[in-house]
Length: 164
Ligand code: FES
Ligand code: FES
Image 1 (cartoon, rainbow, N blue to C red):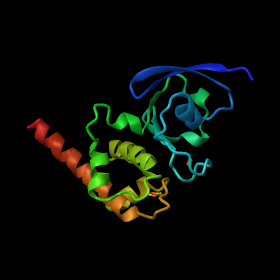
Image 2: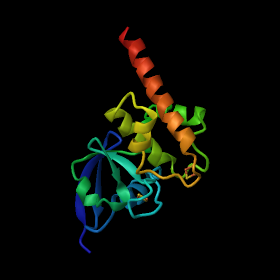
Image 3: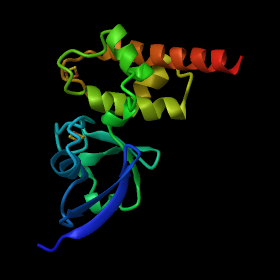
């Protein structure tokens, strides 16, 4: 099948790929661009393991065509810690034991990253709604919620300190 040239920004760097029109973004990210952080779980938009950030929105890359990423800004979990220092969300997931097997974690991190951009001081209920498109089969939701709340508090505290 003829391939289409697609260019987009991935974790701050320009990338070019050739894809079949039917190819899904998750497969291109993992197989052509070696960004294996986003996981393939259900492949039906239910679990959120494949969540990436695309033009400022959370996108389930298992049901998003790679050609739709033309000219987009895409961020995967690999882009959360570009300098090697953990993002506050990653640190909070560690501190609050917000993961067990870790399979859902990249998607949880990417969805919570966008969620905190949308609401930087959420209540527990708002976090639960905001994260309702991401499933954890280890059922560790309680600590995931705690981790997101802690990350929000840490980010807000550091921006208050740096503004002083
Ligand atoms: S693998 Fe994409 S939502 Fe489950
Ligand atoms: S930590 Fe295992 S699926 Fe969420």
